[in-house]
Image 1: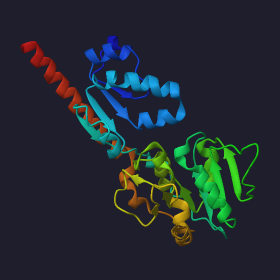
Image 2: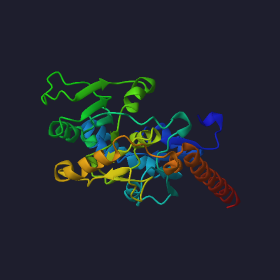
Image 3: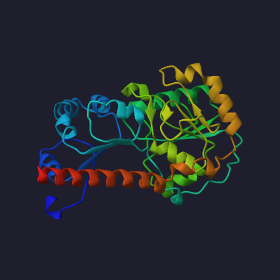
Length: 288
């Protein structure tokens, strides 16, 4: 890569590997941090967790700038003195249309997710499906367990689907459900990609955390407390929200600031700052 003589390298952090040392010595490197790596790896794999714990600072001490997707994650990197900026995850609104209003007799809720991510709080959604058997739940990205312990007939597991496959399901949804158990990885804040997608389709949404992109409360977004008992203790609030927003859509102008074009303008401005700073630093070194 160095032979290509790039002006800058943008690295989305996953793991440290030795070749990054040489890269950081020769090219300004910006690292994007989009998760609390220590908390997430601890849940996913002990091997990943300990390797990352032993090596991550080698990279973080050498990079030239950080981009974070939330303010809470930024706070956990306070020990590193390089330039930092928070840019919440965006979405290409040009690729989404606000969906028509569904005409369901009973509410339809949709969840976009992935397996083996306990912080998503699927268990809370399954609990809600038992409490509200008159509501319908579509689970996209999740396979039905071999033994469906819930016995619920109002649950539909769709497994992994491409966008064009799950869009009809989204079109029939009254309410989207986002992350419900972020406390399990010791986080209170996130700029969630699936929340951006729900809102791009115009679907009102339930979450249980602060969202970096929506710090001011919005009527189309129900924010439950980020606690173990959030669903049980606030069931009445959930029911009111679902009944109020059933058969409604979020106006596009309410979420225009989520557009990736706006986010990328911020990102390019920061990248240019790092390039200029690195260039001035090299000139100063030559003069010395």
